[in-house]
Amino acid sequence: MKHLFILVIAWGISLPSMAQEASPNRQYQLISTSPGFVQYKNYYLLTLFQQLPELRKMLQNDPVLKEFFAHKMQLATEALKNCGFEVPCYSSALKFNDEEIQAVSNRLTKLFIAGNELDKLVKNHLIPSGCYGLYAHLSPKEMLIKAWEQDAKAINYTIGVYMNGDQPNYPKIDSISFNVKDRGYTELVATNLKLATTSQHTLFFEPSMAFAMEALELNDRKDAGDYEPMATTVNKAAIDRINQINWNNYPYSVILIPGEGPEDKETALSAGGMLRCRLAALQYTKGAAPFIVVSGGRVHPYKTKYSEAYEMKKFLINTLQIPEEAIIMEPHARHTTTNIRNCARLIFRYGIPMDKPAITSTLKSQSFYISDAVPERSKKELGYYPYKNGKRLSDTEMEFYPNTLSLQIDYDEPLDP
Image 1: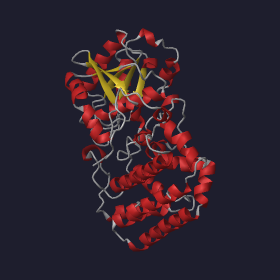
Image 2: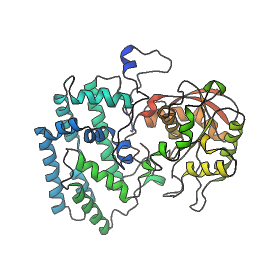
Image 3: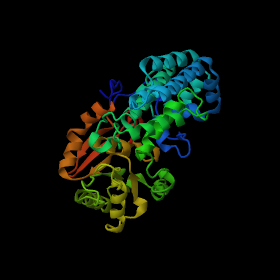
């Protein structure tokens, strides 16, 4: 099962002061490596371990974590000598088994002291980022451990799917690109392992993370970084306009168009995608909202080069004459659940009102699917409800209210975490 979380905060319940303090902060700026958009989106805690100088020094000098690092390096050395043509043998050297994950958890628990670098990490980064919001009700120490366990599982998942060829959640669109039984592929895996254990990777988790990141690159699966940094490129015109909006002039914050990818590699934008754009453009010209959000990644068919969001944006501008400054691209969602989740993320990150309803504009069948089925599907797959239904406006339009839990990283969807 993907998630075994119990959602302890219900919609509409006023939160106690402690929970309010554990809420994400809209002024918080996510920290990333350059060009590490894929890395920080998947493994934000581990990215912080790397990027915060005093914390990095603390972890790098800890004797127990240094011993853990040496142990993983030794396993990698033995794998390169002995694994032959067994792909999982190489991968197991850098995946984290349950005992290793628990050993690091135990050490981080002992290292955590109120006011020290780990405590500051939780209070200054984990909580305000919202990236681990499902654990925000826990104590700072417990939240740290849960975040570490999540990132370790995320690395394992990426290695399992994109090195070993394990089945992903959606095999038709997300599977590995290689025949894992091909002997030539084994050489790629062994070389990746060798590169992951070079001297530039010195923190206890870095060889494993490097191995996972290269697995995504070898598979041409760095989708999570598509069009980034969006705030200064494809979405800059819209973001520059956000502060000028008088929100009282509009009943809704944004009009979301969920993507519909074509099923052949020659078609850039499906017929359904065009019709969804026309429905949304009609709402925009009526003054329903100041922005249209186009949502959808490089999804259908398998390994397509066309981005649903980008193609819808082009259609809105070139065919329907919608100004670019009114269009926000969300080019990463791969499912209907994440269309809305990712829209909620951009609403939060871009400073659009969270307490104002948004609307989806799409074909009738999907509109009712969003209102009737997607909430429970989201709870099952994501561990929470990314939005709350509002009023149904028509067969093709439905209100929704975004939830800040949408900022939570999804550990087993590395193409759109």
